Image (cartoon, rainbow, N blue to C red; front, side, top):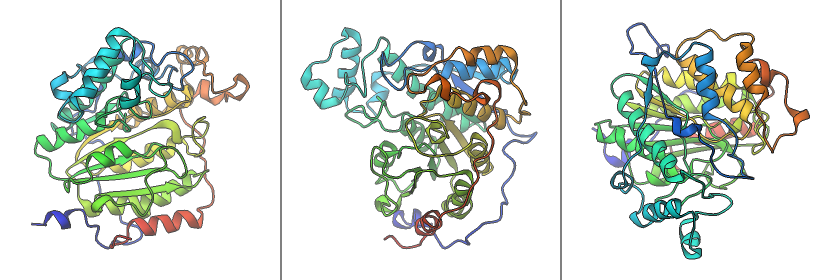
Length: 398
């Protein structure tokens, strides 16, 4: 049996591993489940905020229009209690957020201490219930995954939340609660993979001293929150892949084959949490990455093929069309659906009605309104990508 110091050590692996894992779904496996709530249909984040766009309700409506979500495969989450929230978050912060939501006001001292009521993390009606529902959904997702289901919770993925404050549009940190749920249920090695364009700093920080958890983040370098350097291994339990601007499908595939899968194989998880932020897609206004949704679906499919308890979360994403298409198609891939060449007219009408202050009307690509599947964004694999992959799988810490 390994000692705690040994548990997160990555042993030497070949540059490319053989794909011995099983397909994401099989006839004997329980059906994937979708976790959501009507709470996420309500307007949120007020005016002049990147997340005031419609995301979660569009995804849910699209998968239903496509006939991909039988009622038996949907689970309605419940909000967590204050007592549950304080298993990770400070009581003073939880109560401050609850009070601010109920009164619609934030004292300047509270704003400064807890970072709520700011432009970044604004107050809006129903904020506390929405944030608590996000956590409740991720706890439920981990519980269902432990029963054998692959569980999709696109409203989750608030990976920047800190114990004592909001950060990066995230009030509570639902991935932390999902991981803690896996551990409570007896899982011994939980792998967290973050594909969001922004470093999953809140999750990494939460488990820096927990040898049963490894956090692995691919994110754009020199992008807020300006953390997650390749050299930062956080006591051995973290691996970070900060990619240069313009990261393309070929480069993501290189990192998956030469870093992500070797690291996952070496860690040998018995549970997995994947954060699928959509801001790494080409066309997102808050990222310079250039990935297609197909490349990201392929990545998640390779990870779910480990056949361990798996939760797939959402995350960031500020282009409502690319977000909706990505997460809708993600559910399609998880459930083995055939992707339509063209969306039904009802779906196209819904997409045409959407808008985004960060994207000019003339910049809306026609394919965003009519189809799910992106054209690939292939390209050369830069030396920086190859060096990054080699660096993060090195045995010794820098």
